[in-house]
Image (cartoon, rainbow, N blue to C red; front, side, top):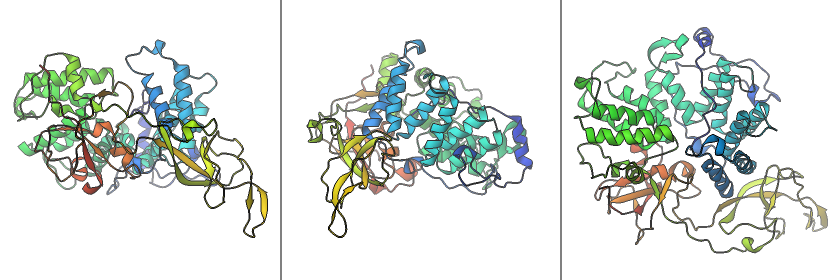
Length: 530
């Protein structure tokens, strides 16, 4: 999902040449009571010997379901098909702010972007920086990436490219895919060119970009294709030789990039299949104008709307030697077949909380789950549903508190059995979907095609062969640490009967045991494009 990078660009700065000559030590500044924007970080080191892939989704706070709906509604109002001057930015800001107040980390960063864009005249660049700092305090990797971009562009802080790279390095080490993709590309030179912001550390570059790709960051596929296409020695050095196997690997990763929304990947495959620059070294096994035409449609669609993803690409554009299914030549039918699908959401039954009045009211779409996060503060530390923590002999239901709103006092018994009136410990409750754990991927309106729920419902383990041709959705338990990176519509796959299901470690480059994942049939309709 986009984090509003349209405003913030990592610009080239020739001042980066100093990094090559500066000892790799921590920036010297006090660590006590220092603002996150001024924290001490090690300088960027392009010559690290190894890199350990971390996953951003395992480090961010859990997302409140009601806040997610506000966030997605705001994102839909910024649809690229809506002219900028026709967008309701007041509503976009209000919805994004509501979600951010619930500590929805993507909404926090989007709200910062809206402030920088001037979409809310009351707030500006300093407010954006403070909001990003709040996200940094929550340990959100993307916030470190954003602070790096602020330093690169001088947004709300004094421009400092040295600090920018230090923040990007920190974000990459924490698993942020955008930072991983950016820094990985910077390490793909044959040797160091610090003045041009390029260094030679290809083994680490590959690990970084594979880590980003495994988290769904499509642009890394384009850069990886160049590193895969030639044989390499253990130190990453290319011997310049292409083989059938290396070209197949490069072709596969570009195709994966198209599935994940990489416009450059789709454009490259359009050229490779249609009119390659070098026939002797082309990646594809043969010229195929029909395939080139379909990649061209996808490339133009991604250029217009980079939020698109084509998880079911193999339904209408499988790689050779598979035959192409028929197509009527219409753009819409091609895009519809390749996009993700979802079943109509079930209508939730009323819950006890949905029958109450505010502040105890909770819409029937949601249920509450205690998080284990306690507060003894006199006021709510952030907007959320809070209830008295267990063990205090209180039956007060969870209620919605705004940030800074005073918690109630109660009459309770102390350890000696004496009654006292005063503050109690409160526990945060997260809103979750009131759908009994149904497999229901969600995203911005318009990016999923609704299909009838298949009957009977089928689910399979990773090690099984696909029993029915169709669209399959991987899913892990709601409390799984990687659920935010697995339970996504862009993880779907079109599979033919008898084909193996994707394996997390092998196919997604994620450190996730096969047994944690179940595959669920979402749509069994066969391709009908002609």
